[in-house]
Amino acid sequence: MSLKPPPHVLIVGASRGIGLELTRQYLADGALVTAAARDDASLQRLRELGARALKLDVTSAASVAGLAWQVDGSHFSTVVINAGVYGPKLRTLDTPTDTDFDQVMHTNVLGPMRVVPQLLDALAPQARLAVMSSRMGSIASRTANSGWLYRASKAALNSVLKDLSLALTDRAICVALHPGWVRTDMGGPEADLPVETSARMLRGTIAGLAATDSGHFFDHDGTPIPW
View 1: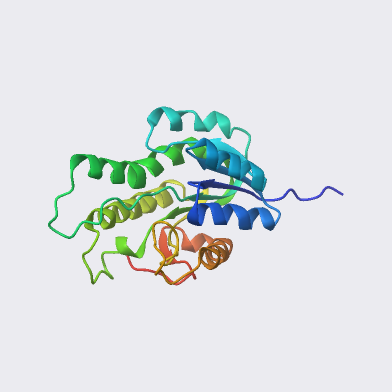
View 2: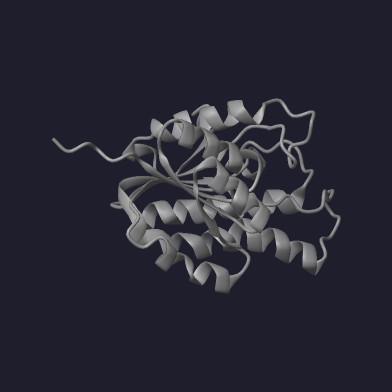
C-alpha cells in the first residue's frame, strides 16, 4: 500500500515575520516547504529549518523569470504569496515620490502578477493560492485614510487576486487574506497579534477553503471582508 505524500507548500516572501512563521509551522506539521527569500542569510535560515530555499526577488523580472524551471515537477497544494512592503507612512495628500511609488507597487502588485504565471504548471489540482493582502486595502470597509500608498497597493492586489480567481477557476482556489495587525517588523510592537497566532489562524483558514470561496477576501480567522 502506497503512502500519501505530504503536502507541498510554497511560501514567497519567507525571510521574516509571517512568511517565516508560516514556514516553521508548515514544516512542524510535516509538510514539504519550498520557501523563497531575497538574501543569503534568510536562505540559510530557511535551509536550517528544513525548507527548500529559493532565491527570489519579486521586484526583479530576471529573478522571477527563472522561477518556473526551479519549481518544475512540484505539485504545490498551497501557495502563499507574502512578499510585501509598507513603504513610507504617508498621510493622504502627501504625494509619494516616484521611487517610493515604484517600490511599493512593484513589490505588492507587480510581484504577484509576475510570480503566479510562473507557477501554473507546478500547482496540484485544486491548489489553494493565497495573496497576503490587508484590511487596509478594503474600499467598502474603509474608515481611515492613513498610509494611502500602501492602501492603494493592497486594493490593486485585491483586484489582481479577483482576476486570478476567474482565470484559474478549474485550477486553484484563489483568495486574498488579511493577517491581522501582527507584531512583526512591519506591524510594530503595539500590534494585536503575536506572529505565531496569526500564522496558525491563517493556516486554518487556508485549509478550510472550499471551491465557492475562490475570489473572496478573508480575515485571518476566516471572516469575510468586503472588497
